[in-house]
Image 1 (spheres, helix red, strand yellow):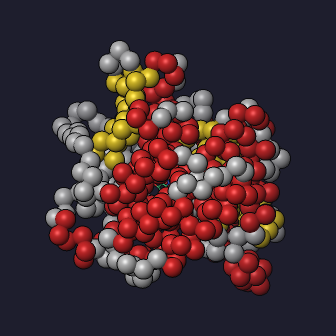
Image 2 (cartoon, helix red, strand yellow):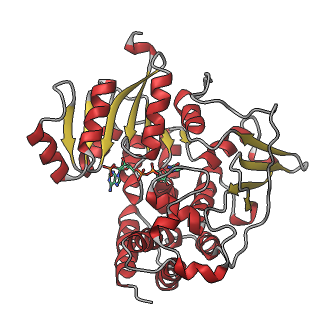
Length: 388
Ligand SMILES: NC(=O)c1ccc[n+]([C@@H]2O[C@H](COP(=O)([O-])OP(=O)(O)OC[C@H]3O[C@@H](n4cnc5c(N)ncnc54)[C@H](OP(=O)(O)O)[C@@H]3O)[C@@H](O)[C@H]2O)c1
């Protein structure tokens, strides 16, 4: 198939969970999609294998030591040009020949490449929710100014995006994000003090990276998604709701002013939203089978318990506060999870750290990106120094 007929994809975070699901979509549709560039932080051997399999011309490792090892061991073949560092990552996001840039790195490091892809006028498939939580105002303003399309790849936002097509914002009453409730949906509250990292990363429905898995267990992930939805769909916190749906089959709802509610449904696999974004506006057969209504299955819904999931209310608080508060929520959560995964903090410290950071920093104004990044750093310092 000639390259001119295939969409050229840049995949940032190719070695992660979203990255590997994206590779499955690419393997399924070699006639429609090709990889123009890939990145990882330090996993250079896996990145080299991807480059060999997909004949990728451009690759970036952001970790300098990994880059040096990759060069010394000559793991990349001569067909791939390898670069190093955060600037190279932003350069890859603006690669002239790319059509769509899928941002699937984890954490706040997604913001700068997202902005770089916007400035370069690329279609963006956005899995990295932290970019919008941290810098939503700037990302959305620049995307509008440049006429760039942001295709939501997070399954809930992708579902909402699909349900909203053909409707005007004035017709929308509310958006309802579904949440699995994670591994501790029914755990007695008295056992929360004993939760260890290995328990928190074991998600019942989704196989994901460690950070997002812990976020799902605390529902900080749904908090990040509320903020993400606010920026993507322009709705205030009062029009954003969360419902627990343990089966993770209905990926979110849009309720219209006439009472009709639309949902998008598919099995809990990220290949569905990823493929939707990469082929948009076209559709093609899916990588894996969809729901089978010839077999009985149940869908359950219930409201989240605020006592069990305090991070959710903290996210609403940050969203209502506005300004720098969502950035503080995000940075504090990232550090809390990092310290929990290293066994430096107990599980129950995660909401406490976020609460303390919001208390101290939420009212800081962020007139520009530099102020935003300074606030992000300040919240991280506070998070690293936090003691129970
Ligand atoms: N996983 C899901 O199902 C899912 C669903 C919806 C949304 N998301 C969002 O998608 C993003 C990726 O999630 P994930 O679960 O795929 O994460 P993951 O499995 O941890 O993978 C993260 C990817 O980003 C790279 N990376 C990590 N830190 C980096 C840094 N500081 N600079 C540059 N690259 C870095 C990693 O490279 P190395 O391998 O070298 O470390 C890896 O390729 C997150 O924002 C998450 O919230 C994920």
